[in-house]
Amino acid sequence: MMTLKVNGRDHRVDAEPDTPLLYVLRDDLALNAAKFGCGLGQCGACTVIVDGKAVLSCVTPLLLLEGKQVTTLEGLGSIETPAPIQRAFMEEQAAQCGYCIAGMMMRAQALLQKNPKPTDDEIRAELEPHLCRCGTHMRILRAVHRAAHLMKTADASTSQGRSQ
Amino acid sequence: MTTGRFLGGVFAALLVTGAAGAFAVAWRPGIAAVDPPSPETFDQALVRRGRDLAAIGNCSTCHTPRGGGDFAGGRPVPTPFGTIYSSNITPDAETGIGRWPEAAFRRAMRSGVDRAGRHLYPTFPYDHFTHVSDEDDRALYAYLMTRRPVHAQAHENLLPFPLDQRVIIAGWKLLFLRGAALELDPTRTAEWNRGAYLVEGLAHCGACHTPRNVLGAERASAQFAGGEADNWSAYAINAQSPAPVPWDTDALVAYLRNGWHSDHGVARGPMADVVGNLSDVPDDDVRAIATYMAEMFGYPTPDRKRRSEEVLAQLNSTPVAAAQTAGAAIYAAACASCHETNRPLPYGGVNLALSTAFSAPDARNAANIVLAGIRPVEGEPSPIMPGFAASMSDAQIAALLDYLRARFSNQPAWAGVEKTVADARRTQTVFLQRSLPPDNAPTDIRERGKP
Image 1 (cartoon, rainbow over the protein chains, first blue to last red):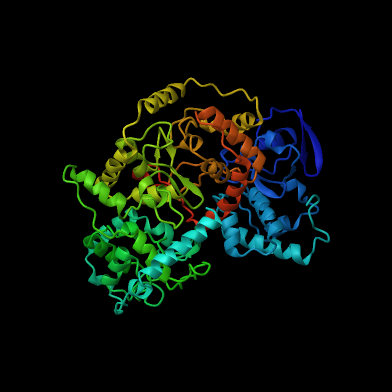
Image 2: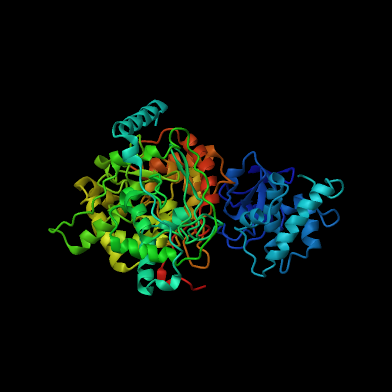
């Protein structure tokens, strides 16, 4: 048993210390936004935020997470009150099949938290570890810019994420 | 290097320069500019040969920055003396070498002087390129002059006074530049002599793999004893090689050609650029380099042979270690699933008992690779490893590396690993931002270009 901090709450988790974080999120905590893509840390679909950094949850065993804060997409906003990053991706219709999008949003969120006004090049470089087979890359780029704008103008009044 | 030794060195260089008569020694005439020659005037076969030679010389690594045009320069090279920026060697008339006649190019290669007569800093390894033949310089010139011109002004070097005074380079050259053609050794095969010509000359292996003195020159008495490049250790590639399994000619050919070898692992860091370039050059040249270098490594001592046999014999029998320490637990949870499954290279992780990184004198390369992983080559099947910079703290990586050192090498523990990791975290970020996106070796060149 270990305690895992996810989206601001402590969870008692009954899992071996070498269990990948992704399995615990999906199988034990029913947080299904993060996806299993390749299982090798190469596609980005499983990305979550740990202590402000984008982390590939499929290659992150639980034992690395003691005392750290995990944030998943569910922790940023909900269907009723989407976070700026979620609103932006919806407004730009950046998802086609959507499998990569949760991971894309999480890394973009981590980027915007440390760099509120990234350039095109910075966004491209940051999202390079993420694969999208549908090819909505241009919309994703626009969505990240839109999220940056939303975060600045709305100044988090109504739509800021719960735990960020 | 201490400041005292450094300043002493600077003083010595100044003294030598002064004694020799700074002006007479330092002054070089300009060579008249020409109109940029049209690409059609160059023989195609010569251009193609120049392309292979440029790959052997690894020119693109320093002269092609991330996000910049091919050979457009501007890549910062950190040195103990300050930061030197690579120059634009495209045929652009204003900012590149478009107005350089071949004689000016040859002079730059031979003696480190630009067309206008200014001394070039030895970051440009003309102490090696001075050995390149006229014929090869002509081919390199033909290749570079037929590239796409890129207008990109060279960045000013960041050097303190007096090192920013180029006259000082003339003193350095007096001390360290030996500009003779390499003599052939008639007792050796043509292949060995070809290898010597390439290794000591254009391929400039010693520029990274030979330690440097306080004035930044290679120490001839310690040739190939290990140096550094871009915050990576360039391992000793002589008898002091820390590789658990000794290198031989065939292993070197395969490694330099494909970027990996089953007894050694995958090339990474700056060496990934080198093998990426070598994957495309003629077989004969790679074999010549390997033949010469195998002799530099030397025949392994009985002790090394025994150790190597032990390491190889244990590979299939070692069980995953019980997780008794924090480092062992991290290894078992995050590393062993790739590194201890016997899945063959290059897609399986190398068994870390074979990795030179854990038998090396310091933990730098091991730290770099854990932090940054191995990025895939775009559009090609290639080895991969996720980086753990975001998910492991410095203390966690240090615990992991201490455990791996104890388990997989017969050397004493490293000192100060956590600081090494912290330094690597700082410099690795810089390295990744600067290097080309496919900073990696291809696996099997027959697979190149296939989806």
